[in-house]
Amino acid sequence: MTDESFLEVTDVSKWYGDEQVLHDVSFEMDRGDVTVLIGPSGSGKSTMLRCVNRLAEAQEGSIRLDGEDVLAPSTDVDDLRREVGMVFQGFNLFAHLSAVGNVALGPQRVLGLSKAEARDRATDQLERVGLGNQLDSYPAELSGGQQQRVGTARALAMEPKLMLFDEPTSALDPELIGEVLEVMHDLVEAGMTMLVVTHEMSFARAVADEIVFLDAGRVVERGPPEQLFENPEKERTDRFLDRIASHD
Amino acid sequence: MSVGAALALVAVVAADSVTAGSISGIEAGTSVVGSATVPFQGDAVDDWAFVFRNMDYLLGGTLVTIGLTVASILLGFVVGFPAGAIEVYGDGILKRLVSAAGVVLRGTPIVVILVVVYFVIGVPQVNLGVYTLSSAVMAGILGLGFRSAAYQSQIFRASLASVDDGQLEAGRAIGLSQFEAVRHVVVPQALRRSIPGFQNEFTIVLKDTSIVFAIGLAELLTRGYDLFAEQTTAVLEVILVISAIYFVLTFTTNRALDYLGDRYAIPEGEAA
Image 1 (cartoon, rainbow over the protein chains, first blue to last red):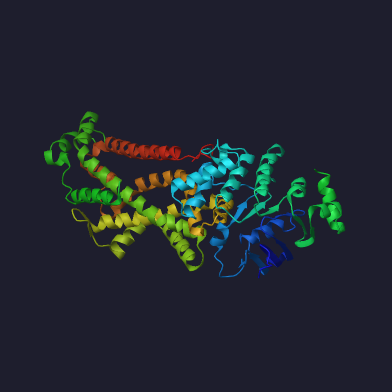
Image 2 (image 1 turned 90 degrees about the vertical axis):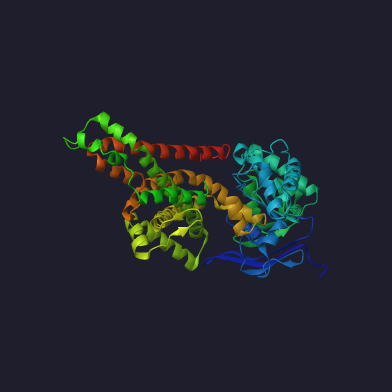
């Protein structure tokens, strides 16, 4: 199929016990696209994101990445994840490793690079996120913004073809958010394909090719940012954006 | 010290203890007679002289104690660490078996364990080439070692479970398998957090080696009994010297483990 999108999420549903948290969610994105998932807390944004690298398991529907069936039982999740980078809300840096150790672990243990090669690659990625002077710092010695940049470098060091961002700035003090968004901006410029869950509406508006608005596990509305922010079709979207805007 | 060296150490000294006729007071035939006019209250100078004359005998017992402790702790680690990991990450019948074995071992007095291993089950002696471990030594190591494994499994179970789930998740997210993520991400952090609990366990095992008297092994405390049975006025002196030896052993190992904790402490992280 030549007209298949890079990432195709089709009718994905998921339950936690009896509670359905995703209802037939569908969207697609092309290589180099930036798609932003927005919506109120508990709307299923993060769960949807985590289904893409199978940190959460979708029970129904289909997810295809670059022509491969992500949800197929035969899919090796470790192979999948080495191609899909993830940045976590809580950073989740390996507490016992320095910045360079955090970033080098994947290249060394998963990609099989030598220790020296892995360290070189890690150094490059840390320089890319502006932390070339903090290579040997430990997570507890870094600010939240610095930690999240290390987290981003850790994902980038695997040279992923898709990056997932799960509320990367939600745990940060307001004055530290900018440095993380700046790194994400650079990635957009570099043509990285990115699926982002965030409450940073100005960022979403500036870089997204498409916004997907989720509420109660359903896609309420999706479209390019101008349309969705300026002329939302659904009243629910309008209300959500109003409420967010009053906090901006 | 390697396991082999520790075992060899026990073998040498235990072999000596079987032929334990070397209390010097008896051989010389002097000290007992003159000082026993009032039981338990002798001439202090004479009693200290008695203790120091028999220092070799006590130090031999100390080596048995050290050998048993090191071998038991190592066996306890080799068995207890995987057992703790199975309790955290395992499932099904294996996890239930491991949990049940732990409950039984922790719920049984150590004397009972040793007696069952030595007299009921029975273990063969083991020839290490140069040295031979008697079946009593083997039973002591197995009994103390497996009981320690049951306790160590709980130290490691708790420390593995205390590492935030996000750590494992982040490891999986870069493509590490479950085993690799546990090994490279969770275990290094859990081991650091295990050190305080491990210090306790080491101290407990060291002192509990004295219970091997129940299967006829003459370690430090048993040899102390031998001594003041010969010179009944020297009870206090013998016990003081033995206590000092135990103190030196526990103090140095605890400081060594403190050093290890500091050496591998995570900068700005929680204290190990």
